[in-house]
Image 1: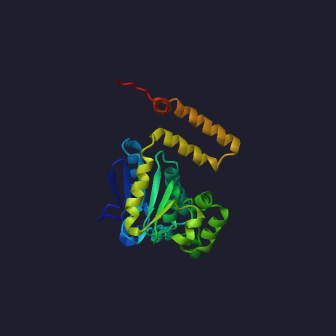
Image 2 (image 1 turned 90 degrees about the horizontal axis):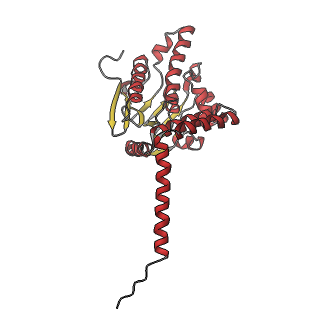
Length: 274
């Protein structure tokens, strides 16, 4: 138990909330305390209208999250392991479905459960020194917090098999063409780059963002016809809001104003002076 420090730090940066897993001496390994704190932080962020985007990172410069707490896992039996995996999956699925955009700021090792946490976020921004992998197979086990499923959805079947079945630690350069990294920055610039990326997401209306995110998430789960129906239903729900109508009418007003200005320039008034 981490009784001598806060295992999760919260920092509000305008509309962006930054969560930092704070166990640097254990390379920010996930344990029940961290998972409990993370769920509480998701509750708080979800209920705060001023928070428009959520960033998750790890303390220190070595690791984002270097996996689960192996000591705790080793003490489990089969039933306990199943319950532990289901509990972790619920947290990461909740993050995957979170109404607001989520970003993983990967500042070092993202291994095992840490890689699963990063893949559960909408966007992954990495330091050029970051490392990714699923080392579980080298311990005669496997990812259990959604890694096999999230990896396939984020990078495709062939790459997911390569990462899950090899146990290898992959560099950023090796992973760039895998498709799950959205942006790379020098380690010293990662925070600024991530916050700038997050800020671009906070400029859009939150309910429209939520409906769009839910629709995109369903795209890989539903047949095309069902996914299109889901999209149309979400479009209609959002379209019924005053904000959506205001956005459309605002566009029309700006277009008409631009058209009038263009007409004025093409037909200048001829003045005659004597």
